[in-house]
Length: 525
Image (tube, rainbow, N blue to C red; front, side):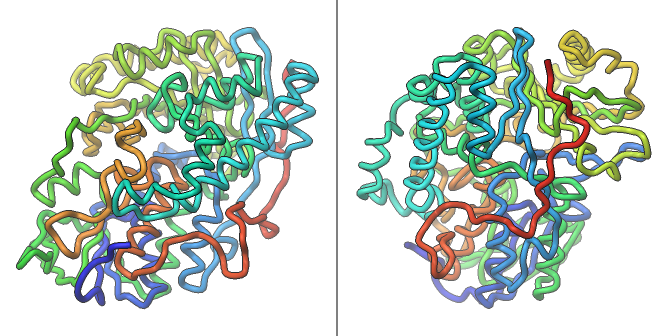
């Protein structure tokens, strides 16, 4: 594995998102002096926090999987995730509603999910689910160490017996076709393939290897941190400060001072100069390229994932059919992905994610009130409406979303809203996200593994990248890994996530966490 040449005693990390924070903790654990520089007033990056009246709103991801990856970062400085946060295991992980009026609770416990599938679709599908679960587990074990939790120096690093194992598992086929080998019910197949949207690719075109995301969602477990998702980066920042990191908030980096092929200092908008031995750019990839003064040459342009419209709604009521996370599927499926990724049209029959964080933390809203987060995937600005167009389109689309949700059973939703915030591709663009997408680069084959923008910067001996735009990719688990891999480029560590004395890649159990079921969730008809 290639590493940063020369001295690495003092590292400046630019960006306090999850990847930057994970990198800081791993660097501190390896004995480096670290200064973290963040343009915002506090940590989080995409996993930020805003206030709407008396409501505390997470502005980024709402789904936490693989929390042991965060625990590895805390452990690097002798700390632990359980010491800093209380996690609630979500049962069900999701509730899925379909256009025909049926509902399915998605459990991560094998016996509970098998029973639910049997109720929902019969014994043959239940048996298919058990075979699928076994396949997902073997797929994850094959991929995690060799293809996700590793630094690639060239595509030749793929040549390994695990590559043959991945091929034997069907990982290079198409996702929807592989899932269809286990499940014939179209509704069930959606539950195990919608995750391809996280990777920015339609299930019909995504590699079956991306079913590893489904493993994280439907097998390994889904969790919620008390205090909301923003509590995770806040806890990581606190651990970093306690371990000796210097945290600089409201400090925007405007330039890199270079000499003889190395960055010698970062320059702040305030005029301050911070000298360093090494720099980690854990900011958005487009921002990193601006600081570097160039983007790497590639044979084809970078392709970005679809974007999203998010409606944060503080309401005076809620609806008993909602779980903590509810997937509301439209009747269309293939057409939806065509609209999102190719034709650039808004979903004509939307599939939506509705998250109600007050299910497990009522303190995020005023007494007797509820917080709902509605995510509607939409085309990015490279293939769909421009950022300027969204300024007029946004309010109309908000009204159509509310009308559609009321049609699907959330009666009175529009009238119940007391506080709200609508986020569109125009807002993502204003925050500096290329193509108006917070999900960065799509995981096409040409942008995956060693073909994704690498975390070492050619032409500069001491600059490393971290975040969703570099390896291994998009999502909370993968950006945590990204921070660890960036640190390994500096410290020479392997970056591997296997704990001493273990011989498995399976996520460890979390005996210290709360695992209570969702309250107030009667089974849907």
